[in-house]
Image 1: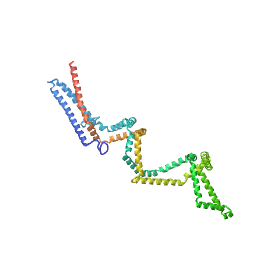
Image 2: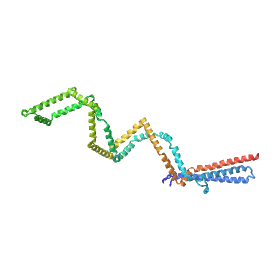
Image 3: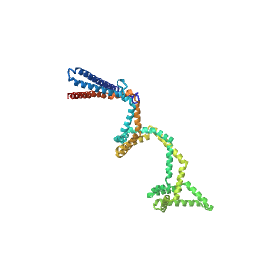
Length: 431
């Protein structure tokens, strides 16, 4: 099993690993040879010291260098395994303390690398908004994003229906509409319509409708029949109904022409007074307000309204799904254009980018803060799952060569210390 718990190795390429292993082996051989050389020099110097007294200095240096080399060899080996396989306490430090190392490593990363201060500081160095702007400004990427969004449309619509979100939103909209007072709102809307006497255009249209009605043969026949029914029989013998109808139509037509030609006609003024009075009552009359609220409640409660909303939803869904799956989709085209435009605006607006970056920092920092204990536990669990043999091999392969130089330093420092002690001993005895 690899150190990560997966099949892919993490040591690097096979060639790199082989080179590291070869370099480590050469360093070990040189260090061991240097230790053996110290032992040999010590033995030779001690043997010829009675003949050549100055060899005492060499013997002292070689003796201390041997001790230092052996001590550092022991220290280096004890990190990874038991020296000579002996069950010596406090050896094989890394394998024996794997769980403690794992826990401490996880806590170290959590406290030092995932603390709020360093995380926010590092996140503030990244211009997330610029990255988003550059990504969206690319037409190909924007088109790809639009295709991805379009593919999600059917699933999104189905999810909305299954989740009850559509009914929930509809109900909330109805509740909000029920809270809105209709009469004052209608008064304000109509007041905007009556500005600059624009309601008189509606009055003009009304006169045209009446004029067309009076010119309609079927309408005139119905009016004549009604007049005939109301007149005494003797008048009908003299065709009084036709006379009266002709007079009524002529008078009405003449009046309508006068009204249309005169912007200050008394009928227009009367219509103005009627409209203004109606608007005032809408604003202030409790009776009108009650009537308007009742009409609103009756309208919202009608089943036809819900059926209409259902039909509108089904039609909208059908149109969206059909367009999203079409080879030349208007939705995809408009989405792609919108994404590109958003990217360009974002790139040119520093304030929006700054606000967006701050939002990213807050969101990501909060996410890291909420998940850092989990990251710590994940790291610790992964380290605990590492194969000990492979872990030891990996560490030794990457830093073992540097550790071997500790042996050289130990021999050199030990030899110098031994030499100084020997000189001190000679000086002390000389006194």
